[in-house]
Image (cartoon, rainbow, N blue to C red; front, top):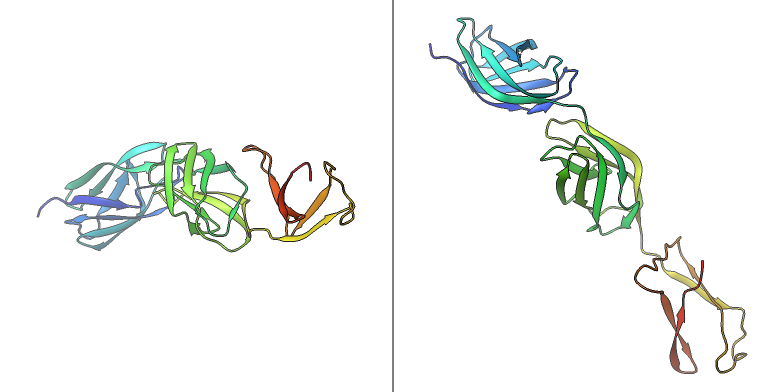
Length: 231
């Protein structure tokens, strides 16, 4: 009888405390075979077929560990560093608290324990792209979503998830609902200062980083720029 072989593990990692059900794929598994990870015996080792086993991961120290299947005839198969135990990721903050309905916003996510291949989600919907820049920094492109407040999560390949509740708000573009002035129509002279109040359908954030915002008013048939002052 040939020795067993291991070709893959799913998932490829899990929590330090263990308890995760893993599937071992390979060849030559026979009834009664057992699985160890990093020298620690899995509980509930079950031979599903000659090419598939399941078991419950033991508690482990952080890092990569070899997975070994031992048949009842003592022959073994090993996948070196096949399973990585790690703490779950955490999400501690996002670079922008709001975004548009259409998505497409580059969003920075801060936290801990982000691993290569992680996927970011906004309210359970995958970002269209996710890039793991470091263990503490992920960027993603937001998906299209309905107007609401959403949690932000990062899921590592080992299926562990970090979530920050109510972290990101999707807003519909505001509309102008009114333009008023305390200066009566035709009651101003050349060079006079006119205060204009613009009302919107929802709260707006005025960004002056790129210059002073303005609106264009038609005055006497000509367009006049009215610069933002406060509000």
